[in-house]
Length: 374
Image (cartoon, rainbow, N blue to C red; front, side, top):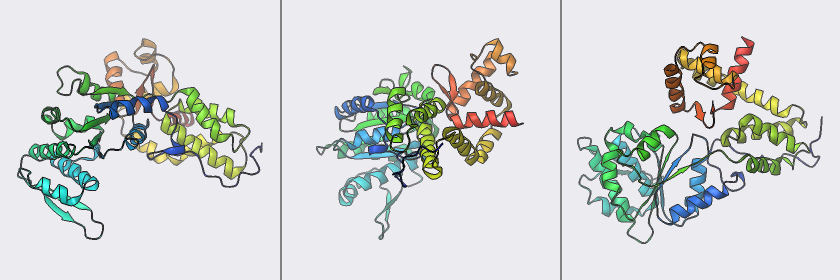
């Protein structure tokens, strides 16, 4: 059925996924934006929790860019150790502040790092003495940020995947809190995607970071808001916009990343083929085929118990930990199911909302298709 508007000739695809989004690509999170901006602008610390690909980075990026203050951003998932943490954080400072000013200030470090400057790109490479206790170096860098904040504009430090902190050093939480708790000239935004670990760090009364800042949990985008967002874009390319938007959200369950991904491919397919017949269903199949090798590799790394749990969730809406679920999926004990669910959550494969569900709806569909074929 051809119902694509005749005037549509290679319009820009209005959907984007896989990178930080802004402007027209940013899905409405107006309420969350206002709350976060108020917290950060009033110079309070923020603890943000949300599963991967929920749009944490895009939202925080939009908030901090609306505040006229320096932003230092670092992903702890990419750090290889405490010394690397210190050097990469200092490297970010050189991107934000004048070289001569920083060069003068780091001359007061207890152990001065080695700086190498690329004469072409002006990028600064930093290394610390390996024989020095690593936290001394990191402490000097954090205190440097506090010092920089004394000059009218207080910096905002965003540390992404903060739950990886203890993987760098088991006592790093205690050491780091002992330093930054005295900082008055810095805003900290600490983000994480493994909710159980983040809550352990920030809600456990015995944790050094207990009550460090305002906890902000980012949920899925409201169904009505997301439907309006999709509909306002598909209306320019097809008369079937309402039905297409509903079908996309029914499959994606309002997951920000996968909704944008599917919408992108649906738009591309409509524009290329000039028809909306089975367009959502066919786009889902295309994406699954595109990621078949990736899903196969992911699946092969699960143990047998995890595979049984994933198959059970993919095919069944029955409540987990019930005798029916365990019997149907050949799982012998509640403790086995519980530990498997916890493990799959920490890996980011499953989300826990009102029920347990797949983070990636395409992976769920891949399992269903593979089981039905084989």
